[in-house]
Structures are given as structure tokens and as C-alpha cells.
Amino acid sequence: MTTLIDSPVREPLAGIRSLELELTGKCQLTCMHCLSESGPQAVHGAMTSADWRTVIVDAAALGIRTVQLIGGEPTVHPHWREFAELALSLGMEVEVYSNLYVVKPAWWELFARDGVTLATSYYSDDPEEHDRITGRAGSYVRTRTNIREAVVRGILVRAGIVEVLPGQRVAEARAELESMGVRRVVVDRARAVGRAMLPGQGPSLDEMCGRCTRGRAAVLPDGNLVGCVLSRNFPAGNVRTTRLAELFGGKEWAALAASIPVPAHNACPPHDSGDCNPANTEACDPAYD
View 1 (spheres, rainbow, N blue to C red):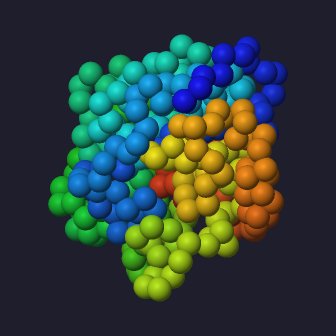
View 2: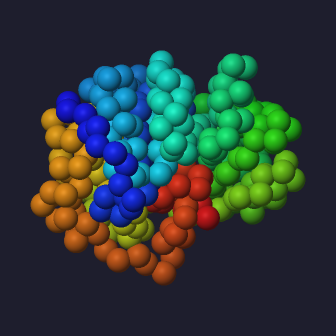
């Protein structure tokens, strides 16, 4: 992989303001609607630590303002804190989208840093229903406990609720989050990507919210550059062989951007974060404002 070392530009190349870095497919959970079909048996992917560092440096040089560390569960990657520190040192903001199933004591200091935001997903105020969606008994208690700890520490937490089951206690989940002090809560439907696809259903750009490639992009664990993590089946090149500047200025990226349907009326709001992520970044669905 080559490294871009030019000085940062005044405006981000191709209008990309936020870059999702899907560090790994590994996750403690197996959410029934997961777009990446992540789980405990998944792998980190072909991207090496050096590859990820190069992408972050390239992104900063291109004027990209925010990187979002996601997965899978990004905190299971052995170098995720190193990547966050690198981005911060380059003047970027960092969004950590975590299931908050495990938070080690040493991590709280980083979550509380200026320029860092924390995001998570929440599904129900009923522990059984929440755990059924995540596929892991006890996930409700762990996530709820760590949300409360973050709020007590004064850390901004953004939460998103994805409607997965008929009759899911979405309104109650929102009320519970707000009662814990979470002020940014948005609800969205599950998109037909990954495990959320119906039998016989294939990937389709029609499921996109319309904001992929428009201010946002993502790099997957194999190095593929996509419009957002939801459009993972439609790559526009690979960062392991081609620098970001070339990819964003290339024909494949232009063709992908042209093929994304325009934002629908019920799509993600302009400053949400998506992919299962409830943050304030330029990502895609689930929608978080």
C-alpha cells in the first residue's frame, strides 16, 4: 500500500467528510439483522495494522474530518486504540461505535477525550427481547450498565434503535435510554443487508438510504472501499493496492456514486451515522440524527 503524504486540502476530496473503518468482523454478539454477519468466529480481515494506519494518514491528508471505528466490534481489534490516537493526533475526530458488551477500565479515558464520541445500539427495555436480537444472553445488562457508566462520566453517548422484531418494544427502549441520560436516540428499520436479507434476496442498492458516497465512505476489513458499510457488496477499488486519492478520483467511485438512489423521504438524516451505528458521523443507515 502506498501512503499519501501531501498536505491536507481545504475541502475534502470528492466531498468525503467521514470515513468508516470496519476494523474487524469479530464480535461478541450475533445480531439477527447484522449487515456484516459478524460474530465470535469471524476474523479481522486482510487489512494489516500498517494498512489501517496508512488509510488514516491518507484520509487526514485528503481533508476527511472524521473516522468512525466500527466492526464487528471494533474494540476487539488489538490496535483499535492506536488507530484512534493516530487520528486524533492528525486533527481528526473519532467516533467509536461499540456494542458496549465489554468496556475495559483503561478505555474510559480515551472515550472521554476531546474529539472522541461514543455510540451504541439498543433494542428493547426487555432483557429477553434485547438478548434475543443480539444472540447473546446478558448483553442487555452489560450494554445498559456501560451506557450508565458513560453518562455518569460525562461522556456523550448516542444510541440507535433498529426495529427488528414485530411488536418490538422500541418506544420503551427509547424512554429507558432517555431516562438514563442519553439525549441522542433515533429509530430506524433494519435494511436488507447481511443477515437481514430474506431467503433468496440478493444485495441491492435500492436498500440504501441514498447518502452512501455523498459525504461518506467506508473501508472494509478486506480493504474494499465502498459508499458506506451497508453498500458493502458494491466496492469501488481496494485501499491495499490503490491510494485513497486515486480511488475517490477514479471511474469506479464515480460510477458507484451515480448508481446510488437519491435520498428517500424516510432515509437517514444528514448528520447521522449508520451501519448499526448511532453516532454523529457521515455514515448510512440505521439512521441516527
